[in-house]
Length: 78
Image (tube, rainbow, N blue to C red; front, side, top):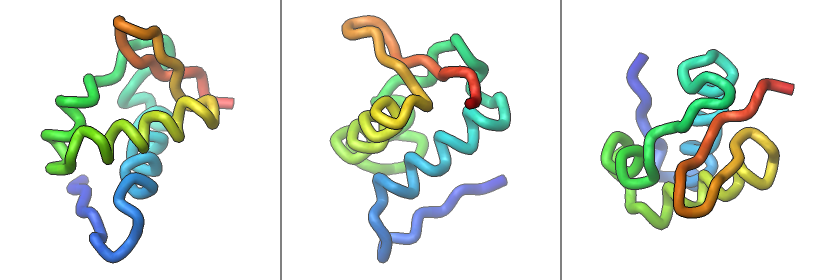
């Protein structure tokens, strides 16, 4: 499946939705590190600050958790 951003909508929200989908489908397994902010930004062709905003939102809603200086990890689906 190809993911295309709609630049007329908030990009970080679309990124968060796609990453959440990947966690829910097990593409990013629970307890495993997801790709880095830099890797994800390159994959989606967005700035690292935009990707960081999406990851922060997913951390705040419990989809992900971060270990500062280490990585960001997927949580079990609720």
